[in-house]
Length: 299
Ligand SMILES: [Zn+2]
Image (cartoon, rainbow, N blue to C red; front, side, top):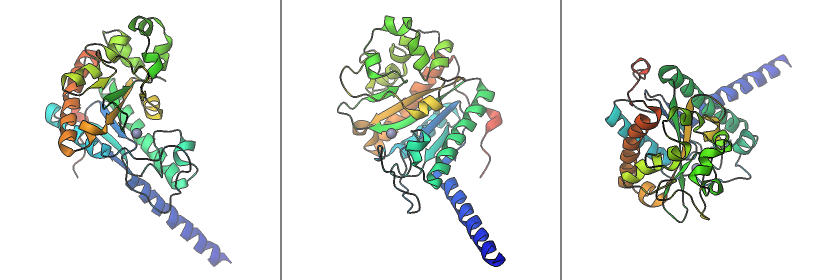
């Protein structure tokens, strides 16, 4: 009797520790030294048989976004001498969606649940570290879309229909500031809210100057009736809408011209890295330099 329950206990313990090891493998967290965090919730390939398939919600992966995040990291390092922090989910979206609240994300599976928690705890750890070292920072939540128009869609938690309003209304009505994932950055930036998200020095404008059509931007301030992704769970959880000084932007990359070939991925990585240096100067009023005290440990 005693022996049986001991065996059961040992078995349970070893299954649990195997699962804990798996969870470490499913979240690829790479420490950096810039005040930038790149989260990649939909770039994973792994479909372990012991995790239940999700029964509802979107289950298609954002192809090549994990590869793209590594290239963006390399280009940032070349330009500014330090890497951003990366948090990549390696599980396929049919098993876990880290860009949704836990119920829809993991749909009750214990390993998927533990992986979701680790993904978001890793991001929160980075946010605390960046806040201590720099006072403020930026989360880029990296995705891919296949909408008809191949533009880079920048999401600030301001919906397409809300973007269809005028600059004056965006700047006058305080409700937009309550909604946005760049709430704290708006206070820091010398520019108005409408200029921050779609003016001549917005991230959209800076990317267009590097050859990548973007929305919102001065030439394309709103989507009209077209489908446009304005951001979801990650930019709400890891931006400044609900407090703190880490703001967040969802960067949705089209397939054609950005994610389709490794040459285009590299071109976009260079463009975004260049744009981010200017963006930090203009809006954070900060020069992008690595934090010397948080250099990643040697392997
Ligand atoms: Zn996505």
